[in-house]
Image (cartoon, rainbow, N blue to C red):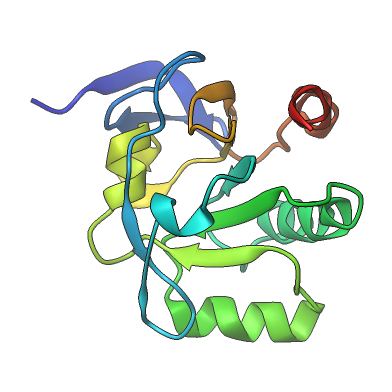
Length: 171
């Protein structure tokens, strides 16, 4: 049975339901298979034994999601071997176009459109829209969850300062 979380999250002030397994600090980050911009599969194992920031968003074609992706691309320069993955259900073609138009070259954009593998394994699927909700997951080198944020109102930004604080503890 799929976990459901209702009456906690909103999008433009309207209640939404998140489905999938909610993860918590201390959990082992579950594997997932998504698509890279060239349509080849990408799994958690492909990120290696690096520290990982997983930036989750509904669509790169919205203002907050665009800024979230740009912010993490800029932060990447100061974080060394930290791998930053940006996940949405946008088609890989749209993600590729977005990256080219905005100079995104340090963040790996990945599409969960096919199977919602990431979204269901990490509890980010918006049931009503088949989109991913906004949030952040930080995994250490052994893929243990060190920080997780499910943003309550999808149209607001995650806590970038808290993400950086948690990542710097791991570097």
